[in-house]
Structures are given as C-alpha cells and as structure tokens.
Image 1: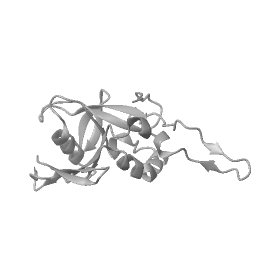
Image 2: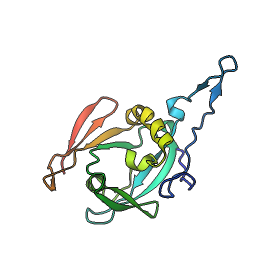
Image 3: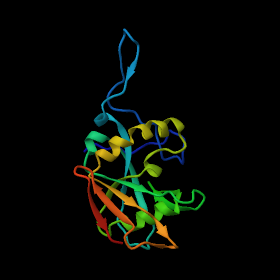
Image 4: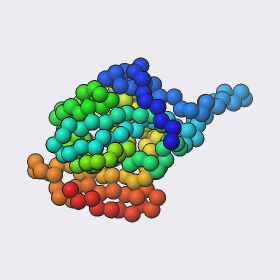
Length: 182
C-alpha cells in the first residue's frame, strides 16, 4: 500500500493539500477533450483512527493514497451529520479540527482500544472548504464505497443516548449486513 502524508497548501484548516491523481490526464488532439484516469488511480484521503478508550480524546492522522493501492484495506463510514452547528474538536494530524458531534460520537464508538483503524469519511477526507474538491469527490463516492472492505453505517444518537444497535456494516463485495452492537 502506497500512502503519503498530506502537506499544507489547499484551503481548509491547514491540513489539506491539493490532490492530484497519479495517472496523467489524457487529451486527444482530434477532439481536444480530457479523460479522467481510471478509478483505481484516483487519489483521495483516508485517515488512521488511533486506538483509545471511549472517554479519551479522538485522535487520527490523515493520509493519501490511490483507491487502487488501498483497496479493501479501509472501511468507509456513512453517518448522519446531525446539527452542523453542534461542533466539537477532535485531533487530526496533531491539530484541533472541528467536526459535528454526531461524527465525534461515531468515531468514539467505532474506535478500537488497541489497534489502528483505517477509515474514509467525507467530513475529514474531503476538504469541505474547496468547492472543486467536494464536487470531484461527490462524483467519485461510488468508487470509494465500492472499494472499501466494508461500509459502516452509524445512525447516531437518539433521545440523547446512542441506540443499542445504531451501527451496522455492509460487506461491499457481497453486500452482507453485519450488525455491530454498541
């Protein structure tokens, strides 16, 4: 698996650099049209969710990889964003980073106590301050979810407490659902 740590050059919390796909854009001289590289050459961000106990601060590290290089070695998280104004800080690449309370709760529940977990989640892996990047990644989400080892779905808190069975996962290869009890 080939991964790189992002440098800071794109707008948005000083964590993001502009992503460039590994394969060059192909242009035909006759039509002068550009073609996107195949999905396995698309570069995106993933993150390592560091281990910890539930009440410890959430810590993670951003990394970049092509979808092909990291294929089936990450889990994609789908969750309800919740109130966009209800933000809390987590630690991303040694910097405070605001996320919705629902995402922070999901990460606390999905974090392992003794092992790293490689995840993709839109709010962290897509620079939300860069309209062009958001647009590109929305069009590529199908590949991000399809190439994950599984998709975790977190339905979020209900009535101030997380529902007992509020998360489940989908095995992307066979779309078999597995219930994760929390």
